[in-house]
Every structure is written in structure tokens, then in C-alpha cells.
Length: 154
Image 1 (cartoon, one colour):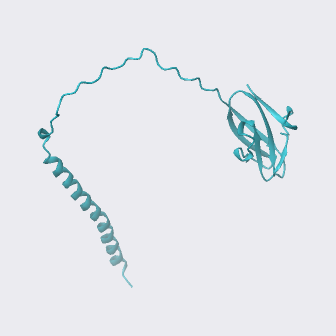
Image 2: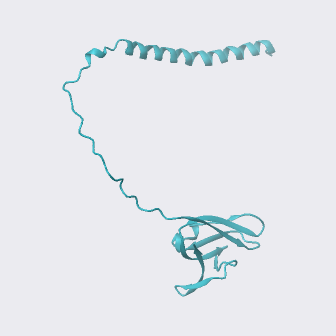
Image 3: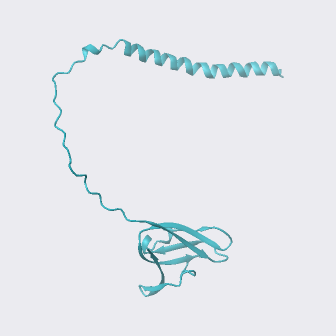
């Protein structure tokens, strides 16, 4: 069995080797680089012709940027006990329920935050694979022959 002192000396030697080998390689690379730069003669590089810069164009007006839509953060919240998965499908996500999956906050509450510009949006909740109206939103309308919830963002 190796004594503790010998083991510590062996570990110290290994650590020294791990530190010194990369530093020697780095030092050699730096020396080669600076030798190259030191022997480089700047006087040998001369322009073949003088060039004139083109005149600067001064724009009197900045280009008009299209206005950005105002966004409001809308919280979708559904309270339902015993649900395993809650999603929202609506005209704001092309009726794709996979685009907005709600997160479980407590035993009954599922929530998601979504940025939307002002307007009227139709949607349905998909709870465990079944499309249902939003239980917390009494506003409804007909969409393609079925009743859907309606959200107005002002």
C-alpha cells in the first residue's frame, strides 16, 4: 500500500505536469507569432494607386418604419378538477391545440400567458382530448356550426 505522503507527492507531480505542458505549448505558439510579427516589414506594403472615397449620401429623412402592433398579455386560466392535460385552440393559433398548452398551477387551476394584439378572438379549451367552452368565460359565438368562447382584447 502506498503511503499518504507518497500519494500526495505523486498527485502534486501530476498536477504540475498538467499545468506546465499546456503553458509550454502556449508559450511556444506566442513566441512563433511574435517572431513572425517582428520580422514583418510594413514598408514593403504599398498601395498600388490612391483611391477616392465616394461622396457620402445624406438622407434628409429616415425611412418610415411600419407601426408595430400593440400587444397585451392575456392570461388564459381554466379551473377544473382532475384534468390531466389542458390546451387552448383558437383563431389566434390556427385552431392548433398543441400551440398553447396550459401549465398546472395547483390542484384545479391551469394557466398560460399569451401576447395578443387588440381584437376579438374565438377559442375552445381542450381538456383531456375533449373540446369544451371556457368555463370561466360566458361570452360565446357560433363558429363553423359549433359554439365557441369569445375573448375581446382591448
